[in-house]
Image (cartoon, rainbow, N blue to C red; front, side):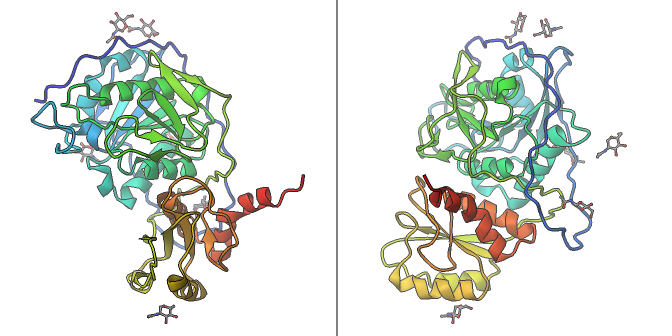
Length: 389
Ligand SMILES: *[C@@H]1O[C@H](CO)[C@@H](O)[C@H](O)[C@H]1NC(C)=O
Ligand SMILES: *[C@@H]1O[C@H](CO)[C@@H](O)[C@H](O)[C@H]1NC(C)=O
Ligand SMILES: *[C@@H]1O[C@H](CO)[C@@H](O)[C@H](O)[C@H]1NC(C)=O
Ligand SMILES: *[C@@H]1O[C@H](CO)[C@@H](O)[C@H](O)[C@H]1NC(C)=O
Ligand SMILES: *[C@@H]1O[C@H](CO)[C@@H](O)[C@H](O)[C@H]1NC(C)=O
Ligand SMILES: *[C@@H]1O[C@H](CO)[C@@H](O)[C@H](O)[C@H]1NC(C)=O
């Protein structure tokens, strides 16, 4: 068996009573779907259940793999380990402090490095989270998802856009495998659970907890390829911090201005949406091959504030004329792409390329027209830009 680090600081205990029933979020109106039967409803398959303490809240931990479940034969290796091998039961048992904070059920949804997490797994996670905390039979107070950090922002954004109630959903990972000296996973997991069961975590959208800091999924990005302080939201910043493993929020609960929530309970699969990378003089000739290979929409990770090239613009316009939604975002990952510079090319607003891809997938899966997709991306930002003083 793996030798897991057991040097966790004594956890601050958090006595919270069971949380109130979640309030429903306003859901954006969606068109009725054409026959897509049978509706895909993954089952909650619990493989770990803690002893029950009826005075504690109930948290569902969904494990997907990643470095937090990674293992290496060397305790100094944090680059060449194998991600996604330690199972949920072992992760939970490595942090016994969790059981003084919450009742815990664990489910292994997948066990992969997050770069290999499929659209199918992302959709399954969303459905399980909705069933666990939002549905009429919701039996949990909160959900924590353990996840690889490489694409953590993509899953967190997808959940933020598809979880239809205010219950806390926290995504957590680690930068060092469980076998490393000063592995960050155990404390991150403890902090994720304390955050999840804190009543003040409600109605803030999906949260990302790593390295003593709390970010909103809508804005968070991975900023460092190697270091433990990798997650953050450069412009809006963190919304909270953890002190002695107790979350403290800097402001009362609020949701991101441009956030929209969609009900994907009838969606059975997400469409293929591709991202093409911008660079000096790019002519984007791969756009045609991308569409020919089945992409239903394309995101361009453009330069600067989403600028497109002289060499590429005609081809891009030809594809939009042929009915392919094209969103221009920015590879800078930090700022706004504003509507209007290029006819028919949709501006991503605050969303970076990977988050733009997720929003496109949701909108297309819900049967939205290109015009509706453009509105979903641009309308709120346009109305801010057109506001009079
Ligand atoms: C159950 O949790 C409460 C609140 O934290 C604690 O006071 C109590 O000792 C726990 N009971 C058991 C049997 O662990
Ligand atoms: C439940 O999970 C266990 C362990 O991951 C797996 O062996 C089993 O096939 C799963 N059952 C269902 C119905 O998915
Ligand atoms: C859980 O709480 C009990 C009662 O306060 C304490 O004795 C025990 O050490 C705690 N367990 C952990 C793992 O912190
Ligand atoms: C809720 O649970 C009841 C009893 O198990 C079941 O009959 C009902 O179909 C469930 N409702 C939903 C929406 O899953
Ligand atoms: C899902 O499909 C069912 C059955 O067709 C329908 O009653 C329900 O309104 C649909 N839900 C959404 C969110 O589209
Ligand atoms: C690329 O696709 C567009 C839209 O279908 C078409 O107008 C254009 O001729 C294609 N260009 C090439 C080089 O195939």
